Image (cartoon, rainbow, N blue to C red; front, side, top):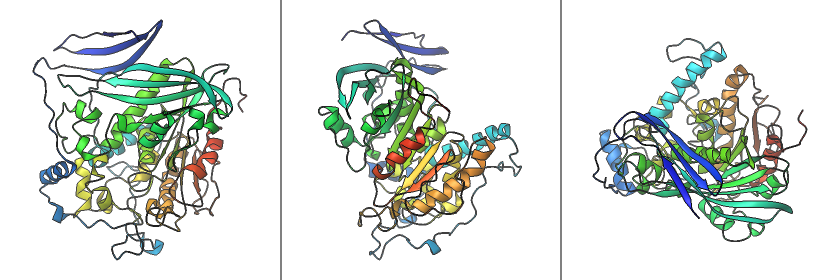
Length: 485
């Protein structure tokens, strides 16, 4: 395949960068990055590689902390003497939540215009203390169509494209990677179609791309795209770990490593959740260039850690995505940090998970605690307003790990309480909230507003709520030719 890349560059001065990729007669404008000065040094930058344990210890040291200064992380298994709390009566340790409708100076937020200003305050607190700051200057993405297949999927004639968004080398840094994306659209649509994009686990992406799509059976942590294409929509699968590894040892690689020129993060540099959100936005940029897709009607779905990533994406790119399904996202996602039930901050600060967040977040696993955070995740949900958001999880009959029959580790009630607390912002923005402050009966879907919630029977999986989300999404996504009300 012949690919012509046009890159306007004037090194060492203020400029705007654009990149175009040509496939035959089609031209794709892959990215536009902000104006800044490019370095003129020609010496290649050598990446500094650390293990997750080394990098985490380095970040703790920047705070003057060691491992012994952190609280012990509880375990999921309710039978263990080190088990987390699963008693709702003991969960409300920090009952006072930060008010999203009160400025940091104590003044009330009275109008939608006020909320725009207050939103900036909340986002700054998340940037500094929790999720980290993304760089101002970012590399361009060069999209390549790897393959195009006409096939059947769920009884529908579809066209499936395997895509690679190639990035790097850049800024004298030799790091390179590709954003792995699979896009399937109905072959005989009357026009551009809505697309539901799953931020998927690597195993699901591997299975989906290993043979005919119709033979793909999702893992318990994936969703069945057939139900989307049968509605006349497209279905896409994004592989987030293709552009940012889910491991602290990968922080000097991928998009975080490339943007930091191969060097370890500063304390407030972005974590992996925000990096995964960056990739979702790059995929949406590709959809803008694909004539088969209505890029104004792109929904997101993610489960567990990728449910966290979907929520972060919706919060930071709230006008770019039409609807989101956040499944079992738990601590660090839709769950209130201050609801001490199931997974807790010391778990997120472990060597296996700390990379999702910035280095400042580690402090809240030590002498500081959830009650000291200037924000909580009801405000992350509020940042999504007024975009429609469906949050769900499984039963609290088991933790989801030692006892796979439940989802208590993700704390469904803590996620519901966060949605309730985000409701006033949705109402201020002219949208409808959950419509109830009472935790619903198992299997009851609260879907009348732009905020939606359902707790399903069973464990840590997005599958039982998937059809309910699609029905909810159908209020906002419309196939070409479909009558809207």
